[in-house]
Length: 567
Image (cartoon, rainbow, N blue to C red; front, side):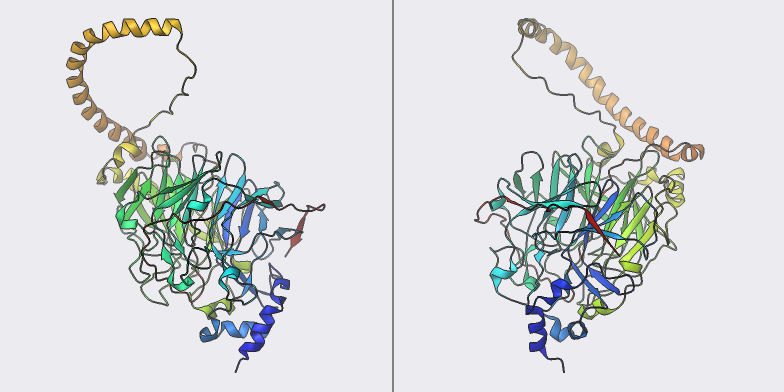
């Protein structure tokens, strides 16, 4: 029988902090719940748990016995790792970079990380505090209400700072949010709050309180805003993904896919219906998809890529259902093509079944899967990952898994099966939701810059003359209004025909020179959860809680700021 007291003493001794992250390739077992984003030529990986063969056997034995695993967890991933994308590599051979001086930012699990593209900075919000010492006291579990900012140096290194922000006392820290960035804002949708995410909560991690709506953070003003306007069908999104698609409408759209709501045993959201929001107007839309759709799922990952001839594709991989404690885990890859809102499955595109992972768009056409488990059961952490160092690579053009990251790959091209759907006239069969056709098929020019300053004398005189002319113009306007409305109906029909002609035209339209790719690679949003946890989420109608704005705590890398190459 395992001596639980001895194991607790082992944890309290702090030995877990000395174990290596990342483990050597031959010693690597699993990485559970990482978060990853791409900035320029580097993938940055943060958070979650890691386990290697060199970790003490008594500790690993706990993981094989679920009855003893509650409250005892594997080694926290303390370091922010980086992988160089400027060179090609095989997953087994790739080296990780990490700062020589460990940050004082606590290791977090199920957080949400977004990228400020203008400043090339990362913002990390929320997540569950990773237990490192086995203590169960609440004050040791809940991290301070702090927004963390990581500033990369372009060489795989960087520094973490705790940001002073406005209104942080009016939002709660959640785990399992869907997150992305758009139009100078960070977005975190839904999630759950418990004693390990925010000091305002008394809920255990397994009984977290659902957080309705979403919060935004303005990268320029450093201000938080609460938003409660969200479709009732996804009022409490948990373990979904959020992906920014800049190609459509005046501001682009943020697309939410999958996830579940409270309580935990409710079926996950239907992937045959896609909900999305304009990041500026915050108006929500809903659209039914075409063709077969993926199984309902949560804890999957998603990335997006600009396609040819005005299409945009969102790839999702893996995840699990949530209708049982040991729900089915998926290994399939699906792609949602816009504006057709049509799903296609990669065949044969199935990889290893995987949940609690993350993925990012790397290079020109590849998806990089990072970490994950083949089962939500606690004991699964001790089973070796079939992917070397937990890294898997999927070619989004050829719709298949490959063995190598290729920095010199050809640009992304829309997969053949998707091209065929458009050339066969698939767009004409779409049954549009309210306002969706206008958003996706109209090309709206950017708003002109607003003018400033006082009116000049000439402008004032013009206003006077205009007022006189206004009365005369009314009669003329009434006549043209009738004709305009009639013309608009004809124009909408012509716009659909024009776009259909572009997408459904001759095969040469698809074999011509590719349009430039949108260089904004979207983060995937996998939402892993602690092995064995059951999230029974209770209704929560308010995000507002009392609190204090934290003081600015700058974390500097000391004199030697070079990166250490490991692995």
